Image 1 (cartoon, rainbow, N blue to C red):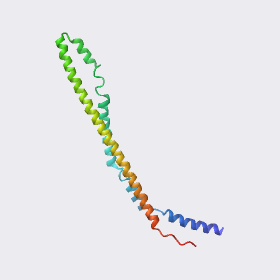
Image 2 (tube, rainbow, N blue to C red):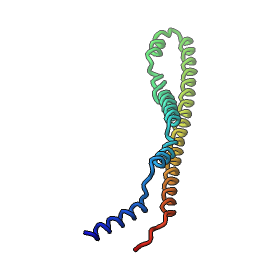
Image 3 (tube, rainbow, N blue to C red):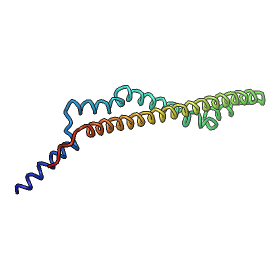
Image 4 (cartoon, one colour):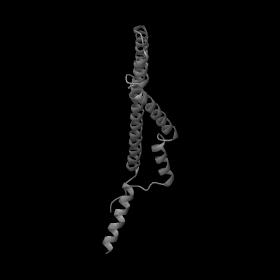
Length: 153
């Protein structure tokens, strides 16, 4: 029984050396370093990117896609009596179609730019968090290496 208690004492001493207890203040510092990148400004930027992405995606994918089958254009075509009126209306429709294509092209480019910047932002966040984890692990390893080992009996 005595040998068992001696073994437990030695084991607990070695365990403390391998995994030193972290003081509450040190733990707070480590947690603060780790989570300082993800805070209120980070969430604000993420919400702004999400709103911009939603609006540009809505314009790109849902706005003006049913232009040709609008009821107002079909009714106006029924009201045309002469070929001159039809020609003028056709020119107006062509200008409107060109305008809608330009709007869709700009919205598509904006959507791609915002999506790329959002992915870049998230990638930078993950890289920063990963480097912070590495720094914390390195500092923990240096603490372990600096502790002198007790002499073995």
